[in-house]
Image (cartoon, rainbow, N blue to C red; front, side):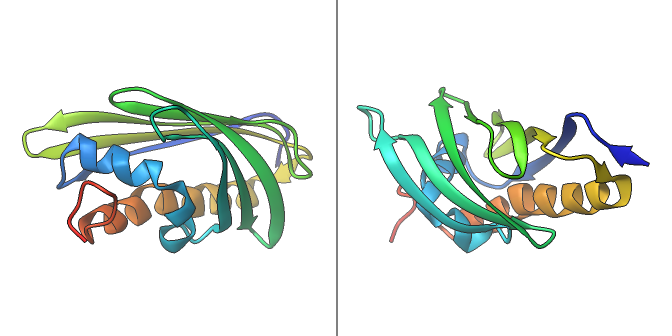
Length: 154
């Protein structure tokens, strides 16, 4: 079986940190390669007036395939979304993190929709989903809990 249409993946985790610290860590996009095994490079091309990233060039490697993307970010008080246009490996991508305070912790929901440029065998889709979800959630949790992001002390 092959997946030739949009692939969707999502996961929720709880991080023992306030939403502001999690969102701040997500805004530190140039550090993403330190906590995401699929990201090789990230560079902010343009920022909003508040300093948050607007356009970011990233290089990703997944299942042996390297892709170069330009992500356009949009930020809210408790969410961030990004979109990528066509690249060598995908027709489109939409990702989002939604944060919800739970006492002193934060429930983080990660959603990703990606439309591959070519049909992929389902076993590869499952393997890719597993790697992406682990990086996007467990990698983020490790980064935040290690005191990263500008809200945390140096």
